[in-house]
Length: 328
Ligand code: P6P
Image 1 (cartoon, helix red, strand yellow):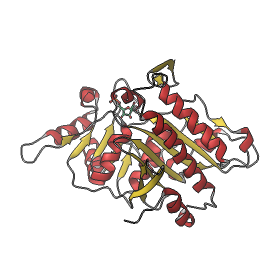
Image 2 (spheres, protein in one colour):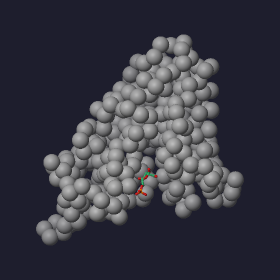
Image 3 (cartoon, helix red, strand yellow):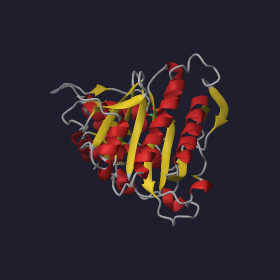
Image 4 (cartoon, helix red, strand yellow):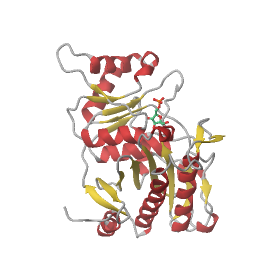
């Protein structure tokens, strides 16, 4: 395969980016720059105690903020504000959206989880940055408003993630399929490594926190019982890393389903709709899979609040259909 960098790929496919006139391409470049800076510090997290460990703060989710969460959040905000193409952001680490007063004429807003799965950093498990891009609905020249962010997932212009694992990969879609780019640290470039990703069906693999089994609704329990039943078939493999980006990435490439249903501790589910489930659902549908809350297609859910949570079942179409069948 010929070496194609992310910048070259974006430039060549510029016209395919829905209505993009270069700004969207600029945003994707800015996100890739931010992720390179995050990766650089992640790779030595164990050595530099200034960025490892907790900040003794908790975010709006009531979750411990790791120093690297905060670092990734700051880097993304800085890169997106410098880009000039983004008028505001919403982040898992920010209580409310942030409007860039010096970018009132920019067309796009970006929502992100700066470092999903960050509780795994201390044990060197994969973590990820997840992003979702919308065109603003408010008038140019004015500060962005909540409606710019609270759009249904099917209005996303682009979405993607960066997974920081044994290697670093950026995976994104603008609605023209899904492509993966692996970071070559020797040249500091993301290079096309996984063109036109499609999620296979017929794969016996599920990702769930089995410890929550007793708190799942009956339909979900029946699906998991089906997965574990080996009377007349091979039982399914359970693969669960505890970092959604890593579990999602494996299922996207190899097939499988990730499920985080409602539990007694998380009656509305644990994953956030706007900057975890929506971007992953856009990617998953573009790769030929499905994403549902159990009650609705994720991309159809009308958001009410920025940090709202939703149950999520996402992955190979046949497995999502199977769990929906048991939940009927
Ligand atoms: P549990 C990380 O905090 C996260 O949001 C996802 O990345 C991950 O899949 C899930 O929570 C893990 O949650 O309750 O199984 O530890």
